[in-house]
Image (cartoon, rainbow, N blue to C red; front, top):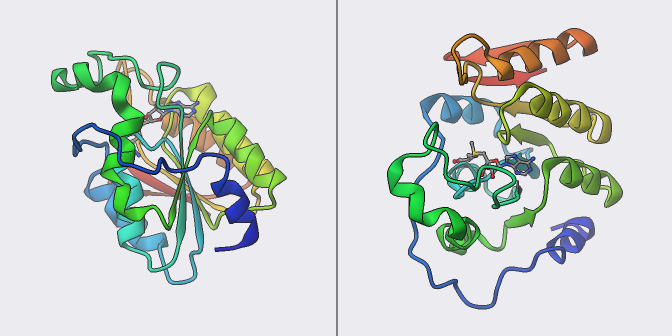
Length: 209
Ligand SMILES: C[S@@+](CC[C@H](N)C(=O)[O-])C[C@H]1O[C@@H](n2cnc3c(N)ncnc32)[C@H](O)[C@@H]1O
């Protein structure tokens, strides 16, 4: 691990003992996400920045499918992000788990500590931190808040502060009211503005080149 990543590891140290909560295997990660990662993960990938980690399902997939890559998983694990129970997108069995998300994430990912750096902060602060610590992720996986302004900012900040990173994400057709698909719109507008192209996989995952 590079010295810069070692410095980043000090921002949030793993606890010395496993939190006393049960692991819980839940996530927003499907076949299309796997296909997308299988396309971008290679032995040349050393650092991945994940924006939106939830309970660690995508992080574990990236770690399981790379040999030495370090995954930096960013989430507030709080009410600000996704942490407040909302029946529009959370199944009822999650209701009593929402205030323990961070601890469940740590337990779910406990065996990956040597290559997984959790950062409990907002996405834009994490992206700026990469730049400050001179860390250039090979891939940035955008999967935090799915509203237009938030996705647009995640894209813009990533491009500004980490210009070499491959930007990927999911939820292409995510919608709350079926009239708008904000992720798709944000990615398309970003591509148009910056003269980039997007490849969409199964109408769900996307890769910007
Ligand atoms: C769709 S979930 C991520 C799913 C995850 N990749 C998986 O494999 O299951 C979105 C996550 O983004 C987080 N989030 C939303 N907005 C955020 C923000 N501005 N900064 C940090 N985390 C945020 C939420 O707390 C939530 O855990």
